[in-house]
Image 1: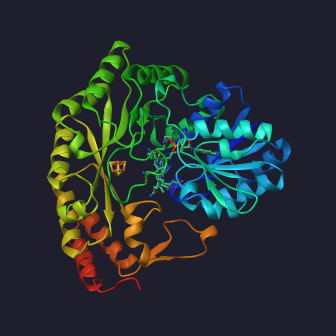
Image 2: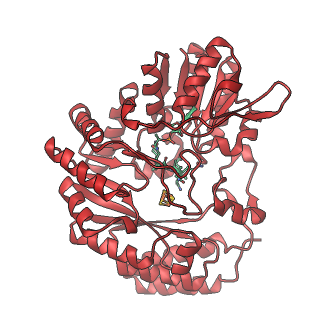
Image 3: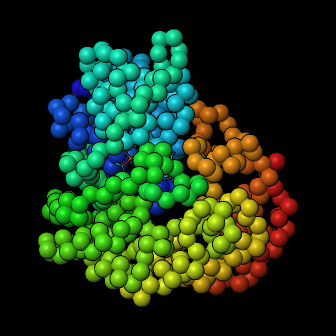
Length: 446
Ligand code: B12
Ligand code: SF4
């Protein structure tokens, strides 16, 4: 076997996700697999989501693939390192990719990786597999970082981005047991779901958002190719719904209209959810989404305070979010809002503005998170001098950090309580949360 691809996310170790149970297949690995197999490489995927470390380690020991390629994000670091170690022990070359490894290339190379792929993986990985097979110099492989014999870290020229995504094979869903995902969805939510992407990369500049894989580029597939893939998914897996996992699905209104025509031409109407920005929504798009079967749109709202939205460089006005949610509701589409506490400069008035904003929007669902700086983002650079890591790098994630001078976790817990109780109309609880917020206002992280 030339390459075993895996990702180090084990659902069984994630109690939060076990409660939510909305797993999706690792599309990046599936794209890599189909690309490399189309070029004649012998590639397999160990999809760790429903697997275990033990099973994966036994597979590596048994098969001893020439290389093991591991996807890493900021949550899976400890598992990625453990898998890399097991692969090395069995004489395999280790390649890491995905959004996190390039941000910590030195650390991952020190931990035994042979090469880190910096962004889009297809071209670099193809080059690496060729170099491993012929024992040739890694310096000729674009888009990677590796260590020379003298210890210096070499960063090769960026790999060319794939110009025509339509020319790529669809993600290799047949290589994994997708039925497990669909079954998990069906048994917990009454309908099975499959994810699809129609584009790569987002050109916006939100300061906290990681662009480590695709930079600020944006490439779209053709509407016809996406509709073809959806028709195939419908026939092959018969899911009751889809998740369009693009960063901003409605970024290009003209594309959405063409996509609707392609779907209608094939008589395709499958319920789906997707993510957008408020400034990429209008009544015409909402009407088209609704006709296509879209039942929920997630809107990155983040804050109800314009001051904070501007500090984030969101490029959206809070009023646009309220309008977008209203427009979607008028077209019978549910809305979900993503919200973030604790961004730089946020004070009590901003939190209250967020609570009022969400009350005015009346979304069907909202998810909150306390902001955390992802390495490589402008937000990370802003707070880096005040960043205190909790625990050793190898064993922690980039969410386990404190930002000196920021309010305590308890403070944001009260903010969350205030929002939830206000939205549920629980006024005594809202009063208690508001009091808690005021009382813990001086409570900052040292
Ligand atoms: C779908 C998605 C999810 C799904 C994941 C489903 C799944 N199993 O994949 C869900 C909702 C579960 C999720 C959760 C989270 N996510 Co998420 N997610 C995404 C999203 C929107 C799309 C991923 C995708 O399919 N991309 C399309 C494929 C084709 O691209 P790709 O995966 O990057 O793969 C390419 C390259 O990375 C590379 N590559 C990939 N794997 C490998 C492996 C090797 C060996 C090599 C060489 C190369 C390589 O080649 C691939 C093809 O070119 C991305 C943003 C984005 N647009 O990519 C965020 C993103 C990956 N998520 C992110 C984050 C922060 C999270 C969470 C931490 C959020 C949270 N607060 O909980 C959690 C972490 C969950 C966990 N415990 O692992 C960040 C990661 C940042 C970082 N540095 O790690 C991203 C980049 C969003 C962002 N812009 O900030 N996410
Ligand atoms: S948060 Fe959304 S809109 Fe902003 S840069 Fe990231 S993906 Fe793009």
